Length: 390
Image 1 (cartoon, rainbow, N blue to C red):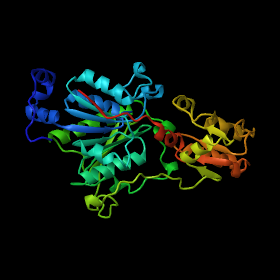
Image 2: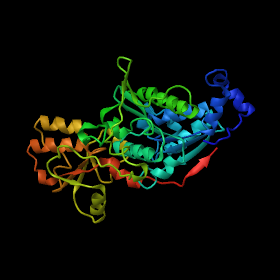
Image 3: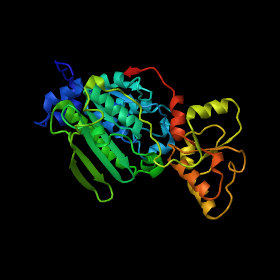
Image 4: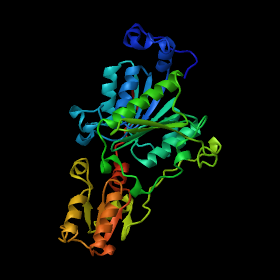
């Protein structure tokens, strides 16, 4: 943040009048917001309300990191997008709505995945980072980059009816790895596509993330450093627990320049019978024209958002019902000698393979796609040049 704070224009004086009349906030805090910058990693359920409220509050510069495009299944909770923006990049859709709220905000679109190669450059360009991701590998990259560069990380998580919120800042408190040194096994970490999420829940947690970012930029209040908020949407209960810094943390116990960013690879604690295949191996075999079947065990709404070419849709609940009834599963299992089974992240497909083997199917012909469709799609997401719009 610059030493000299920018002045507020007459338009900004009117727009932010409800801020300016508060003695705890006033001109000084509003000018700090205008001088400040936030990197938002993810423009989905958590990122949507966070992006809108940060723009409306007057944060001067906001970076949006997300390679995905708007899908119809997003609209149940991702309120920055709408039917008019279906198929468009999420950063573009969110930026248009943010500019409508505040034409003066500078929005920098990063239509890319956060990776080991770009994380330090992206995180280092902003004062505060907000983690709006829905997967553990990216979550650990956000944490490690923030620790190395000395940036506060406003964390949020949602699943079904439950939410979590904290601010991880290793300079004065714990980091994310102090609590969770490594990702959990895949089968213990379903994402929202697999387990579901109440549509309003990201609005609750995302709005609180925006609140914490505003407090960090302006210096008002007490941020959630060293504490975690636990939210139960069914009882409307809020609990706060204290978090301790781990002196043996694999990240923040190291000298900052010794921290090396590595993409965490999630694995199954109990590997399914049969083999496994990486997305790169699958692509090579498809390119070579090898004959095998592809079975997509996701739900139809997930299928409509993208599919591996040539796959058959057989949702996990339908397949399990066939097995319980003793009926033979339909194609693709009756066809080629090898069947590659995939879901969104590798959890449901592993369970399907176990169920098939228990029902008497030969494990030698069943192959699980590591990381599922999410890992397959990752390298294929369009990466646009970084763009800034005011």
